[in-house]
Length: 502
Image (cartoon, rainbow, N blue to C red; front, side, top):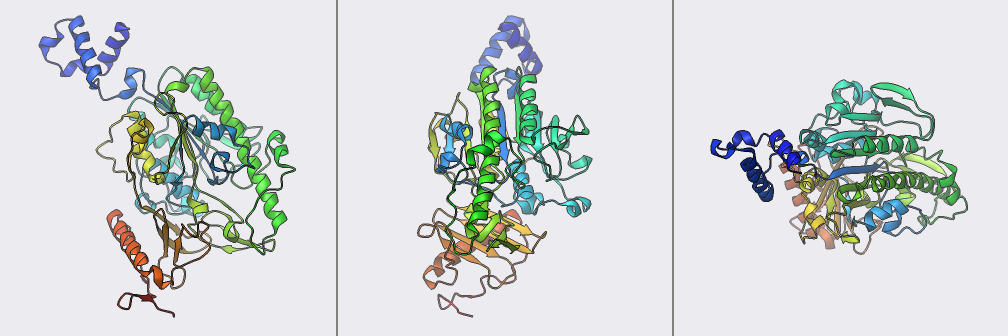
């Protein structure tokens, strides 16, 4: 034990900063080392001490909060996702900053808003050709600099080409695909820098590589990011053991006139089967962590990159969803409905988090950067300036208020032109569609949790709308979001205190 401590002490180069009188003998230096460890000053590298927590972050693609058993869905089978929450802490009010994948994933890794990291929309081939990609520091880079072995397994979708590659942004190892598209079966993946066609189901293959990484790094601190493609379209094929569970299911779907109910039900069964396939593989991974006796001091975080609609609001998919009615798919409907931005978030850490914990705090995806560093007790580098709040004190059971107001933004240019800015409290939501005349939205979530009744022209809510719009404006100014608002709530007459009907 003393020998290991001496080696760690020397590796941290703490000796170089001590007075010569304390370096008289090895035994005295060890005494100093114990004092330094006791008071928490044993070097700047937390992973060097050997007992630093491991980190596993699991992100699904397009899984809404409503599509998980722990959040009340009794029709879907997600025992392993639920297990993480039951054995750790379940966040009931977790939201993403943007309701589509590329900007959402960039925010998740950088702690910056889309207008700050400059990935505002889903990255497609024209954007890659124009040089769009991740340029901001990530929390993975900070962990890498602090002694962690890091890997990204799965989806990247934050830019193509060498300068945007995951290995340039904090990951020692990468197995997966850098674009947004990959087949759910027999995919082509980058493995050891080469594109290789792999046989089998993508979810199984990614899990195999994640398990191999854990086994290879079991004796040192590691940070694994496992980014599944599922349940993104196309939902299948999936292994029969997951599909068969839903073949006879008559799923509950939104009760809206005009929906092709049988079509939406079939989509729902396929969507659920895709999620259950991921869940089964999460179970495989958790079992390996248990078998290797790593569970106690391994943080496991599970979430999704955005929410999803299957009939909700007459939409399919997410913030760039399409209108669906009568069996037809119509134009794009840019949106920031809760179904598109509310996601599952559960975190297990047996060494710290009390099983069965739950938090109703308003959590934003933009908090992840600061929270991971806070949990691992790594100082924020001077050059990093992430937004958000460190909510890790909740892991230790501390009663802290995180926030009372959430913000969001989405600048769409792929299938439609839209510039949305959102402010949400526990009760109210205001969505501004900048530069438009008739599209702004305001909802009273207490009386209308499904956001069916737009109250933007209701004079009874005028003062609240103006107050929230002022908050939204101040937030935009603070973060440098300088997109012009050519029609700022044009229909609201401040002097008369009522909505004008134009």
